[in-house]
Image (tube, rainbow, N blue to C red; front, side, top):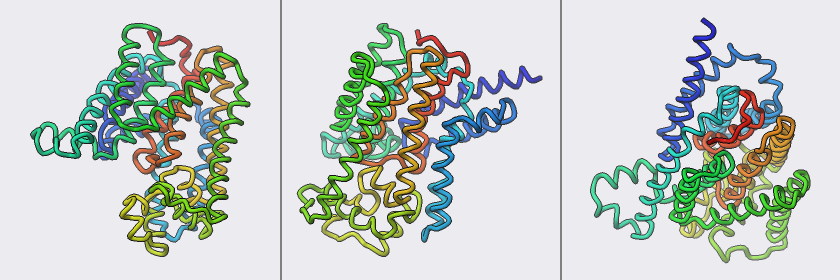
Length: 398
């Protein structure tokens, strides 16, 4: 009886990942099916696996702290309803962690990485055609193209798809053995990145390659790399704050004008913020500190986001929320690294590369909101669990 239940659970784990990898190319409203599957598997795992081991894992503890602070912020929030809705999606990475805790992820990835690679290439071709024709292709290519475009989202989806492509590329590079199949997938994902028209794709890829060189070729210590990266991020934030407070005009580009607006409202609630998620920002600041019509004309997304994940986090959850999140990311990466060393596998830095892929991209944007939270955390959680080696995943994919 128990063995039969475990086999069914294993099948559900495989199915949930496949469904997720198929749907992640499309608009986030289509992702609900994979969320339901992950929730079902997570409930099964809470009965089948030792709960104490799961709850005492460093990932569960540190991400749990992020959620606990989100609850505090929501209770204190003047827009509590919006904050609560966003907080529900922030719970999904923990659900995913429990659902895939002992999954044979290497085997699953071996059979499935080609699926998002193909779908993302198609998606980026569609977006490229739309982007280069200024939308004219949408009305001239018929129903099939229009339905594809609708399923993918809109022209802003290039930011989302290019970030997912970058994560898939990291997985293909590090988890697949050298082969023609691997080379084809690498080329496909690089073409997807090129077609995305997203310059940050190449910047983030360059950062990953530089870290790869220093960590795995020169053998610079992991802690020194973490310290260097954190120092760079903090320096960027401090320089931007300094420029703002000395009165330097940051309006020479639309994005910096947006940064200036959001820096100007940090003082409203610098310690605890005003609520989790973009909707909280929009509804609170849009009502009490409305964006000027001139700035909206220059950047219509200004009322929703600062175009920087960490600045959004500071404004929405305060300096405490920002610090907890940074500590959580650092601890998860250090733990993943140590687990890989203990288990003697070759993936010790993959979690770091995935973290860099996501959060360097979101230095100039923020797609990490609502349903998309799980999409990007999927890659961090999977790389972390592979290093946990809960299903004896030692071998590279063939």
